[in-house]
Structure formats: C-alpha cells, structure tokens
Amino acid sequence: MRRLPDAADRATDWLRWFGWSRLAGIVASIGVVGVGAWWLVRVPPPPPESRIPFDVAVTLAPATTLDGPATTATTTPARPVVHVAGAVAHPGVYALAPGARAHDAVLAAGGATPDADLSMVNLAAPLDDASQVYVPRRGEGARRAPPSAPSREPRGVTPPPGAASPDATGAAAPLDVNTASAAALETLPGIGPRTAAAIVAHRDRHGPFASVDALLDVRGIGPSTLAELRPHLRAP
Image 1 (spheres, one colour):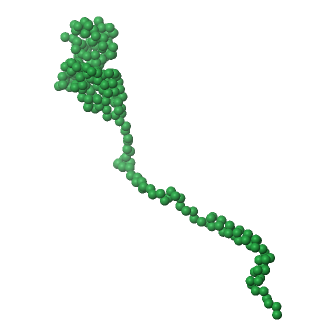
Image 2: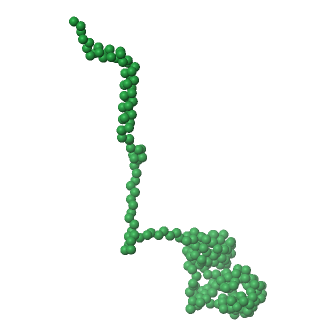
C-alpha cells in the first residue's frame, strides 16, 4: 500500500520548488517593513533640554494705586557741570560724575597750585549743577565775605574773595572796586575774564581807584559798560 506524504515531506518539497533564496528575500522584506512601521509609530524620546534643571522665575505683580497700576520711573542722576576757578592748574568748566564733591572738581581742573589755600575750601562738599568751586590763594581768605552774612551761593561752593554779600533785603551789596578779586569782578554784568584781569592789573600798577568813574582808564571799559557797573561797584 502506498504511503501518503506527511506534512514535513510536503514542506520540504515546497521549499525545493520555491527556493531558499526567495524565502530569505521575503523574510528580509517583511523585517524591513516591520522596522519601518515601528519607526513611524514609535513615541520619540524627550529632547535633552527637558532634562536640564532650571530655576523657576517669579514675576511680581505691579503695584496698584487708586487710579490703576502704578508705573515705576527710573531716573538717571544728572552730571553736575561746575565752574572751577582760582588757584588751580586749569580753571574752567567741567562736567563731573553724579555725586561728585568739591575735591573731584579741583582734581578735574588739574589740582591746586602751590600757592592755593585749600584750608578755605570744604573739599567734601557735594556739588550742584551750575555751581562754582573757587580755590583762594594764600592771603585772599581775609577778604572773603564774613561768615555771618547770608549767602545765596549753591551748597558746596566757596564764594570768590571780595564777592558781594547780599544785604538784609537779599540784594547784593556793591563791590569795593579796590579790593574785589578778578573772580568777583567776573560776576558783574559786562565783565569777562580779560576785563577783570585788566582792572586788577591797572589797580596794581597805578594804585587804588579814586572813584568808580576812574574805571574808564581801564582798557576795555567804555561809558556804556561803566553805566552797567556803577550800581554794582563802590570806591571809598
């Protein structure tokens, strides 16, 4: 009686017919398709940045007022511009850093000269914008305004020697033309550094002025300038 082929024989016969190379190619294709499908549907790992620890930023709510949220204004301190005069190396106008003191102003002008009397200046005084720092020379301090007289000078400023002091009404008293320094004369209308120096030079060369009208002998002073100066000057 003839024996029927079992399943193993049938599979062996089929493989011989189909070929091992074809079967290996099909299995490889199925593997490639399976890997591609897994790559498409997989969940990607979190980025490395998500694993870096970070600080929690806290945002503060703005202050509120009855009229609504308050605005915070940031102001930058202004740089004071001061006039440095007297016994310094380079007198002039200087812009200093905010919070500067009189000492900084003297340094900005090249420092004090050897004949300066720094004991008459408060070098620690704070400076206001548009103020003056005057460094007197030795011997000039005796001609300054008396300490008891009221002063309208900005804080931190030493008045020039011989400068006029305000009277009880607040008006400046006339300057003594024979004792006023060049810096004090420059504060008068129509008088600049050159004219003030000419007045002092004429006074040193020819002696005290007999009257205010004698200023006409000074080069650079004419009748119109004298008319402006007459209310602000006196002569003994």
